[in-house]
Image (cartoon, rainbow, N blue to C red):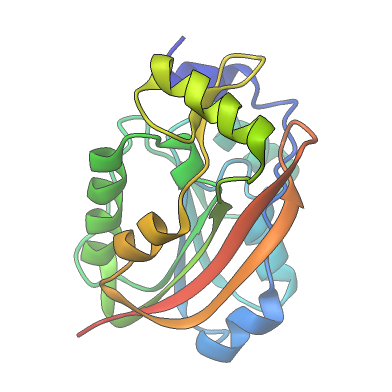
Length: 211
């Protein structure tokens, strides 16, 4: 099963857990800003932003069933299916982009770089990115787990979940290098539950696209 088929198959049952700090986001992004949520799933983060007073919100996701769920649960949101995974907007369109729990679903290095390049393309100069995603977990047990999984995935930190998704936990230095085109405005290390109920290291990053 490929990644898109997996997310379509679990669209009705998964509850995402990445953490939005709307008050922190509001320090860097005004309420009238044009905001895009890339990989929005069923629109949970956009719903929280809407409840916090943000109005110009758009979400895209390659899993059509996630979008259908979101439109049913939150019919006032602007959610768009992009089954080819492209970001279908012109350059310099958005003031801010949200990327929550998406890098973990795109394990390949080059695919992650391509995704960030496309996000930079649609951001206005000086635009803001807000990312929340998963970091590697420490300890001998996790090291052995990641090492074993690498034989199948080819990437340290990438592994297959019990129900068939391929996901990735990231080294912190790798993440900071990936985001080097953004000036760090806020960076926090967190511990949150995963969608399958396990605790994991994670991070929250707010950055400004360098001009």
